[in-house]
Amino acid sequence: MGLAALAEELGFSAVWVRDVPLNGPWYPEAFGHPDPIAMLGAIAARTFRIVIGTAATVLTLRHPLHLAKAAITLDRLSGGRFVLGLGSGDRREEFSAFGADSGDHKDLYRDHWMRLAAALEQPPRILPPPAEPAVAFELRPAAATEIPMLAVGSGGQTLEWIARNATGWATYHRPPEIQRDRYALWRRAVDRVAPGAFRSFSVAVRVELVEAPSAPAAPIDLGYRTGIRGLATVLEAMRDAGVHHALLNLPPTGARPAETVAALATILPALD
Image 1 (cartoon, rainbow, N blue to C red):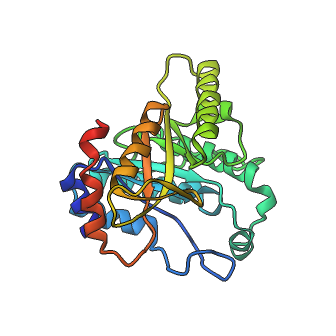
Image 2: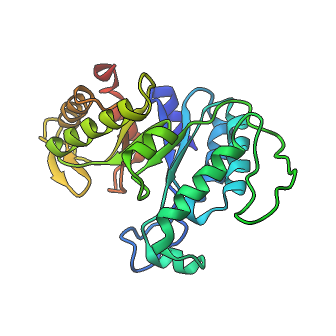
């Protein structure tokens, strides 16, 4: 919570919390992750302006009505600052633990998305399960604002489906030439199914910041190892290529997190 408050003070636009329900030997990170809904509730109470979001809630493993209730609560607690990032999940072990079939993740994602979106409408709609009679349930309180639903990854859907149903698409870091192609595909999809509408394009980047400020950016898995000036160059190139927002994933490296966040803030003015 303290880091989120510091990020707000230093001018960052958003703070994101990941959703990792379970850990095990099959998962590459040894450290645990707090529940994103509870964590963002605490962050909402400590901040005033910064956007708070999930990147990403595992939509396939959460009931859409529970998630709608949580999203509305977070949005009201934060004064309309909440963005709901939604992923389909990609670890078979987690699906098994939750009694779900990972082979169904595409259909689950699409079905849960539609039920969640309906529940977040103003006024909300509660969609009955297939072959079940409609019942006049109400969701109270209803959403006070339009809560953005961001697709994180593809969820097994087409870009046209994402452009039609989501307020934006967040994807993972890839080499610049590949990312430019993905952005072009995204713009074409938006133009086909939502002409004239704004649909954001965001990229999650893993950043291992080194002490030498001028250290050039060296590729690592899903990101770069670089000095602060090298990172500025990377982010400027991403902006010029059409990226609206970069989600920086800062793995534990032994450095003090507050010092890393403060160093990152020094390059923000160049990215306006």
